[in-house]
Image (cartoon, rainbow, N blue to C red; front, side):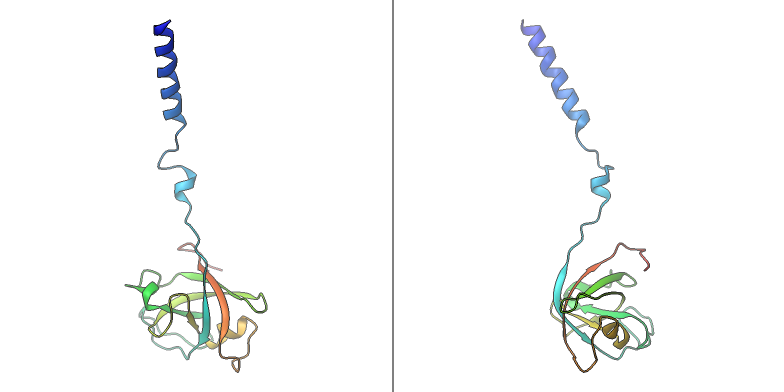
Length: 137
């Protein structure tokens, strides 16, 4: 009976190893989406920390220095939601905001208004997340 039990054990181990996910499985290819929350303000854009010149009519975002780091999110789109009215818009990271807290963002005037806010409001409660690199709205 011992050889039968040993063979059963070996087959069980082999089948469980074959069923284990591989590094190329679809789970490892998905990027985890982290939703950030903070204050959304606006600024007059120009030459940003990513080295591009922008206009106030462009949907541009400056992110906090703690997230900006060495600029790895430059040219990456993010989806932003105005938590007060539920409106969403996409903005392109092109600048750094040294005065922003970790979840805070500074936006071009046109992006701020695209969230259904008046510039007179000045500050919004926002939530946002980065889109996959290469995403274009």
